[in-house]
Image (spheres, helix red, strand yellow):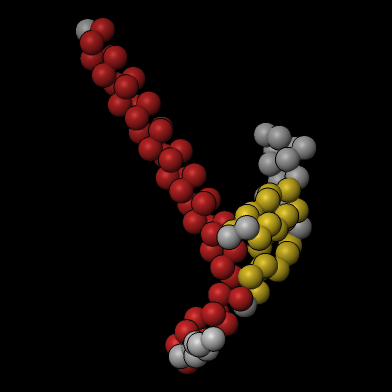
Length: 94
């Protein structure tokens, strides 16, 4: 078997990804029974309880933050589309 050696940069990048990051997910007030978030990355599942401060590997933290950012962008885009639709319907009524 051939062994692969990691460069210093690859090792540093891996170490950074596995550093622990603080995270507290807000409680879902719309659905109080939804008290956990399950994150599955490359087949590895992690269950995170909402409303509690936890430490998770940075790579999982970044996945969660990216997903939250995408949800926010989708919400804003939906709002803009609804405004445009309402404006267009108002213009047609005239």
